[in-house]
Image (tube, rainbow, N blue to C red):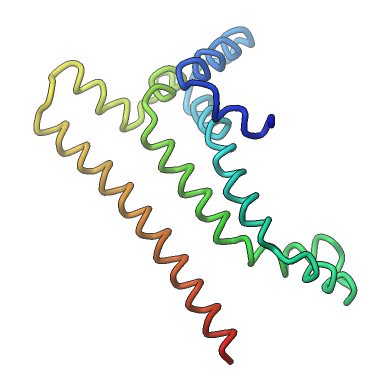
Length: 168
């Protein structure tokens, strides 16, 4: 429950809570506070993806590796990690997409550090819709599309290589 709790907290409330805590602790808002806030916010999404990937792992594979002399770390690294790598990559890329698209946290917790979503919003509020806004927005959509295509291609290649391995 606590791992996925940030999903249910509205962005503004979550952001102001982090800003309040950093203020009380005397931490200056900067790139690192922004990074920590994005990790804290996107972690539950990544956790759910990786958890669902791990739920599909057959338990007997790990036990078989341990029966053959592998310790828990070696069993995880050699057996489980390659099988959940797609989930880890997908979770990472989803987290990147969520962070790129988030301007509330960036504007509040970035201090003097600006991210592209904050720049786009700042231009929009000061100038309205201009060619720069259209170009930056197109750039953001292109990045999101490329990341999504990369995820799909990686998963398709991985699935095709698994099918080739099982056909032999």
